[in-house]
Structures are given as C-alpha cells and as structure tokens.
Amino acid sequence: MTPRITSISTANPPLRMDQSAIIDLIMKQDFSVRSKKYYERFMSDDGVRSRTFAIDRMERILTEDADAATARFETQATALAVEAGRKSLAAAGLRPDQVDGLVIVTCTGYLCPGLTSYVGEALGVRKDVFILDIVGHGCGAAVPGLRVAEQFLLAAKKGNLLFIAVEICSATFVHAESVDLLLSNSIFGDGAAACVLTCDEKPGWQMIQHGCLLFPETRDQLRFRTVNARLQNVLGKAVPQFVSAGVKALLTEMTIARLPEVLVFHPGGRLILDRIEETLGLAPEALKVSRHILAEYGNMSSPSVMYILKHLAETQVFSDGTPALMVSYGAGTSVNGALLRWTEKS
Image (cartoon, rainbow, N blue to C red):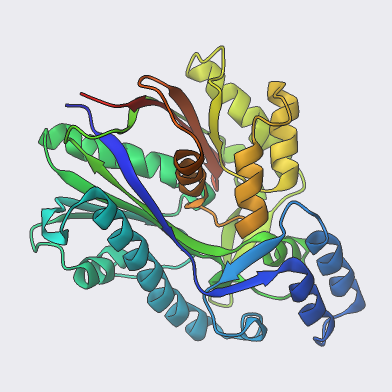
C-alpha cells in the first residue's frame, strides 16, 4: 500500500490584521522616516492583504526581547500545532493513540527537546511513537518533510503518521533599518498546517516522484542569521530571479516536460510568483491559489503549501489519477518538488 496524504487541516492565531491597519500602527511608532516609507511601500502592495499573528497586540512584536520571542515561539507554536493536529486526526477518524509517527517542521524557533515533545504530550500520543523534528529548511521544509514521513510509512508497511508544519514568523520580527528586515516584517505571518499520512485505503494524495536541488552559492541571499540572540531574515534582491531559475532546473531534473493543471507552489511573495510565471511561461490563473493564500495570510513559511493543498481540496473535485505538482523553496537555497496523484482507492 502506497502512503497517501489525507485530512489536511490548518490553524491560525486569532489576531488578524489588514495591511492598512498595520501601516497605521507603524506610522505611530518612533521609527525613521526612511523606515516608514519602506513599510508603507511594502505593505501597500496588494500581494498581501492581511496576516495573522500569535500575539495579543501587534505593538508588542517589534519591541519584545530575544527571551520573550523564544518563549512566545514555544507556547504559540505548540498551541497552533496541537490545534491543527487535532483537527487533522478528527477528520481522519483517528485517535491520538493510533498515531505511529509524529514529524514536525519549523524554522522560526529552536527548542531542545523539539516541538514533538510538547505537541506529542498535549495530543496524548503513545510513548513508543516515532518522533522527528526537522529544522533549518526555511520556507521549503514541508515538501522534504513529507518525503521523510512517507519513507517512514514505506519502511513500516503500515500505520499512520501525523505531519505538522508550524511557524511563528512574528517571533523573528526585528525592527532595524535593513531593507531585508523591513520587508520581512511586512509580508510574513503565523500559521500551522497538519495532515495525516496513512497506509489505509482512503482517498488522498500519493507522492509518486520527488526531486530536490541545492544552490549553496545563493545561501547568503536567502537565510536566517543570528544577531544579538535573535533570528533575522536575509532576503536579497535577486531572490525572485534565482528561485525561479531553480524551479525551472528542478523540473528538468524531475523530467517534467509538461506541468499538470494542479499546481501547489509556495507563495514566497508576489514578485517570486510573478517571476516563476514568467520563467515557466504560465498563464496568469495557473498560480491563483498560491496568490490567494498569500493575500489572505501572507508568507507563513513552511505551512503555506499545505494551505494551498487544503484550499484545492475544499474548492475542487478531483477524479482518480489527477496529477498535481507541489514545489517549495527556501533557505539554502533549496528547491523541492513532489509529483502527486489523487487516489480514490489502493
């Protein structure tokens, strides 16, 4: 039995803010004229209309210290992951004690033990559950994370695995004059997504081919660096160019000459999606779901592709055998792909 992805669920914190409201708040802060102009420019772009944040008041995000940001990541990432995980298990008709594996990907905070310890405890999984925390992949983590999850089930030849991608991007927000940080503060949001991978005969997405490429020569253009004990985003101007070139190279590596109609591309930002469309010669509507998720939630990093897959499941009906292509990209720079197939039966 080939494992399949089923019961995709998401969770967002309750604080949702329109970009216009965030601009109004920024203009009241004691920031430089230059910073305010950049914030207004970035947040006036219609690529992102609103975002959600795991904090009670937006004003606190840009003033909290490193210890407070780390503590917030621990509590809020755990809470969102548990919420998404519970929804996914309920949708799959599974109890927590029926989970054989728990894999969590994140990049916006570091814990030891990792989130699997906190989330597994809160969910009530068995003591003998296989756990794995995957960190350091940035926005691209979900696709390789799902690949690892699939390999666990293929080796076991049975069972259920709960996969969760969760990011508290706002825990990495730092106000400074660097354009990278101003842009990051303007487009990233918080969220979590979970799904069950199972060997049971249920409708879902099978992963029939994988691909990945690494471009370390661009690493310093797309990464986190640590400054004064805080993660700080680095987003070079050339990111849309080399990400789109990397996606094209990945398709060649995977020998995908013709793209399927169902595309699940990480919505890193409007300019990235524009450049990918241009490089691959896509029609404007090809990445409309990626653009929709970006507009409603911003760039949530690793969970974003799962949001797209969930939205597709809620708005479209797929016939048995329908192909889809999931592509993510992130720090490294790494580009990851998975060719999927909707399967109604074994």
